[in-house]
Length: 239
Image 1: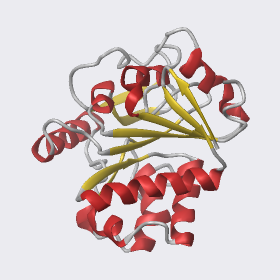
Image 2: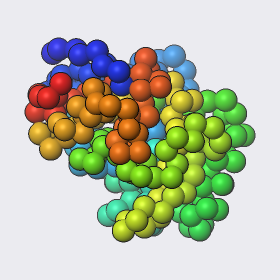
Image 3: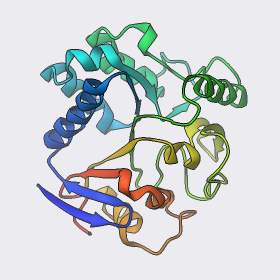
Image 4: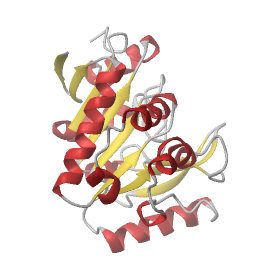
């Protein structure tokens, strides 16, 4: 394992299994300190993490009892849909681990997008006025997007305001997403990055000229001390 200090946080170069073990360790560490919230992400790597957790039994009894499970962004589709991020988390991990409904916090996708975001934000305001997720897990797109902050997204640069909003991603429909303001209130952020297809995006975010409208992951530079990138060798090859 090697660690690379960058302007967007520390990049740790690990195998996939090592990344999963590190992520599980962080979740278990949170739970050992008391109740905590974790924001999961969508994509193929989180799905593989869910399967790994179930197979290995990597999460402790404290984690199963004390962690509240969310997703950092979501498509406006039913949980039963193959496009639902929370649906994948439920089917891939939460159901198998017996996580009770009281510990599950999907976005209220039965509402219209703006209403769903407002309801989710209002629920957070009651539960945690000054803090978002204790641990936010993100993926990275080939186009440098994180959560549903896409290139040229009008939300980029808005560092104040709601922590959770709805946004219409051109060609991809409405999404519900954590914002820059929400990310800034997270206790820690872990970004899972795998494959050579992500190498250019990771380099631009970590080392490139600051152009967050083009490379949305660069918004994490403002909170770099709380950001860790768990990347495989192919993804980190251009750093």
